[in-house]
Image 1: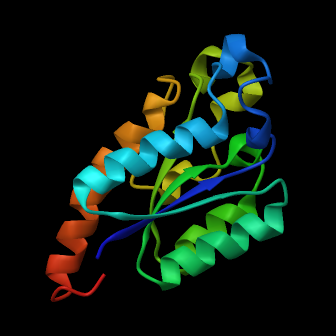
Image 2: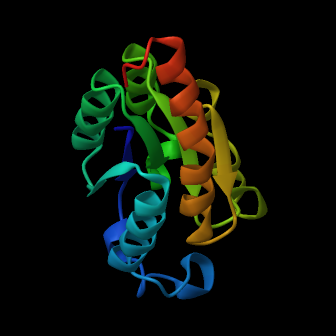
Length: 154
């Protein structure tokens, strides 16, 4: 079965109360429920994690990549600063999609640069919680193609 790890970085545990005008009013648990509903319809296994610790996020990326799982990654502020996350994605040849709730390009200039985008299959931002669903819809066919090319191994 195809697996997708949905990995969330710092401060995303505060969704629903943190700056709802920017990040929306849904909690991370509510976003997870929506993702699991979509994943069930797609026949995809989901691993859903959040951490405020950069090193833990590196470990989560390594685990997913080494298992052949896809990654939907909202690295939050680490997107703009973490070479370690970039290197982890590349080191395990992970198929990853970068996700953001807000349109980072319409915000402060320091948010316009992503250290992880160059090693991701794509970037989705600005659609609120729907960004996660769009990423899931995008990564599943890529994972199926990858599995087919490798003789069915995921």
